[in-house]
Amino acid sequence: MITNSVCAKYAPTAPNPRLWTIVLVMLLLALAAVAVCHAVEKHGSEAILARSCAERPEYRFYNPNTGRTALVCLTEVGKYGVYVIDQAGHEVTAFLKNKMKFFCQVKKSLENLGYGLIQ
Image 1 (cartoon, rainbow, N blue to C red):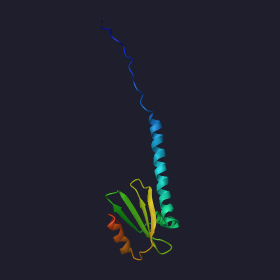
Image 2: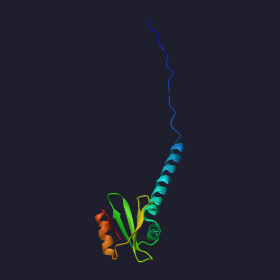
Image 3: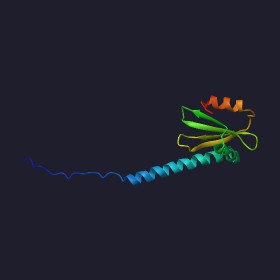
Image 4: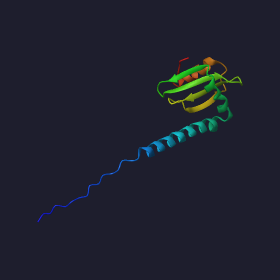
């Protein structure tokens, strides 16, 4: 004899959208902190000097492959600083071009990395 068995329907509840928003924001903040730490960890006080290029860039370069923008300026110590930001405007890295005394050298270096001068 065959009997009909009744199965309870399991309807999983959708995850709370607020929870995912909070997780996403925390992840983005963590990534931003890592990027900022990278610049100072790797480049030390030079990164702090190069950050001044964000406020007063003399030249702007754009890399279409990465979507990043490099802001370049001559810092107060007489060296070219490079401040790189991502598409959202968050810092990726900041450093000085210590061995380069002329803008054409900095330009060539950034062009070799895929950047093109936009200003």
